[in-house]
Image (cartoon, rainbow, N blue to C red; front, side):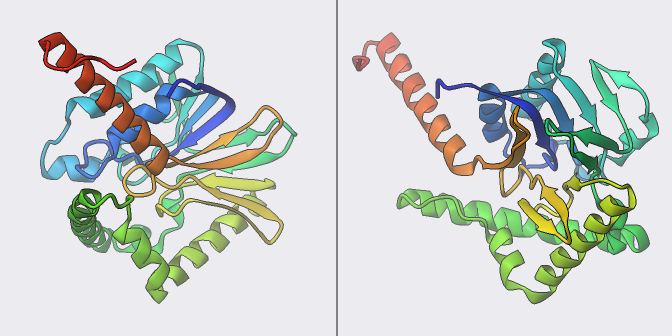
Length: 274
């Protein structure tokens, strides 16, 4: 993929580095072609819960960190707002590392002068606040569904099928999950009003969307475990939700094909097509 995109702002959340389900390769392909003056990392960038249970940190996860730090060195203003899975970073509010500032929340002013509250969102999750043990049980169940989804998609690819998220399908079909998402969106929209903001940009529930709720703009960045989504702001102030799962997969396949042909040519077994 040769086209590069430069945005005024880029919003990412719920990457979950350190989790086997993290789509690090897809995120790297996204970061390779998308850049911005302002970059917000809105919580759960790494998964401390998962890392406590067993260390998992492949090179691609390290590459994501290096890619983000490189953007900071090149001049992007990066703000990191921790979530519940990387809550250890909440001990470092007000500090900087590698050009990245850690904050509890922020107010972002868009190009057209509208203010947006930036927050991860777990503070308004009743389960997280009042029964953290139950949240850990839910995390285990979510991990199980993701593993099942991974195997299903391996079989689907054998027959040329596109990526399909079992957990995302369940969110739309299970009434309690739909109700939880709706309640969460309403609560966070009210929180934006409480801060006299025109809108809110958040994460946490892995449910990407841009919508209006009671005259408040509600934007959820989604995640990089199942949805593979991000939100961008143009220099005119327009927000866009980018779904990268299909686009990024095609890009990775093209790159892999090119590398295979180069390897074949270096071995002298197959000519490289023009």
